[in-house]
Length: 446
Image 1: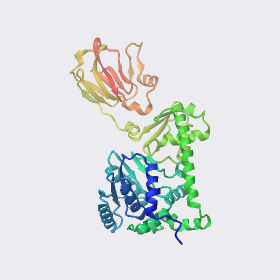
Image 2 (image 1 turned 90 degrees about the vertical axis):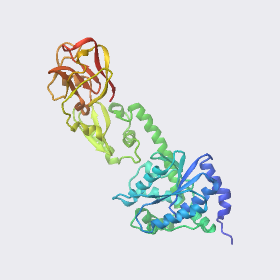
Image 3 (image 1 turned 30 degrees about the vertical axis):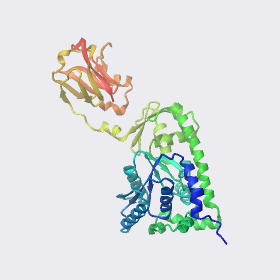
């Protein structure tokens, strides 16, 4: 009796070719195929070379974790040569830690390094890969985003990724490879149950499949439903972000007007930013408890994934680690000479020396001036205002963020304060050096 499964020749002419052209209809694209030498990627290589001749390249990533990996690269190169497909062999160094995660990170770094601006990265993930990803993400406590698993076409780390086999079963792939006599290699680590994915495939999968024969299709279908739900949540979070703030700050009063679920969703999206992964629910709850609900005058700061989260008055701010820790670096006193049209860089930003209807005496240009950090206790007579003010009060009135106040520097001549460089501009001080048709530093960028 003939098998109910179609042969490879029938399928790639009728189904696979149609599938590929439907999921990626732009025939002008160029493609970089990730080819490990395994069964899935070798079938992908064969199909893509037939559907898109002269539009593909292949890349083999050697993680250098097994001695035989180099010979696998030679195999991939030889198979590509038969198909007249250019092939890249990329050696990568896998960092210590979770081996599966670190290998994945190294692999994608290599993809980004070698892919050309007009190329799409093509991966051979199939339906069982998708279902395994859903289960593994479920076991790790992922939310809707994790349960969405992989998309047929998506963006990751500035890469456009295409997975044309994502809804194909592994059984179909195995049959077509056998019928077409496609040679491939078998990585023994795919069966090493020390690794989570191999354990899921070799131990858990047969057990679940024996009870739920259609589990693979069902779990995969659930991932598509989760993708829809995730997109809806993302749209709601984007609307909430526009209402509550920007990528750098959120209005706490507006945030707290949302339901608790929408607050958590917005915070999770906001903290993720352009990163690949969202923060854990525990970290989102810490932001709420330790920063948002902190007393107004508290200097609460929480660090996560390269950023510090701080509350100032009724706003929540996301500050890069480098900017936040810069306040711990002392700024020394220095002498400087200024010239008209000169651009200078000080702690508060970049300033241009420009003529002004009222400013500092032109005779000060070219002379030695003193630039010193704020020490505390200074008073300033701001030009145009009555009396001397504590500099601290002027800073508070200008609402300069506490983590930026270390950038404030005082410009003086012979112990006479000329003005103050701040992140919000140069403050001219009343002094004997104030003249009409003078000059002032103008803030260009911070």
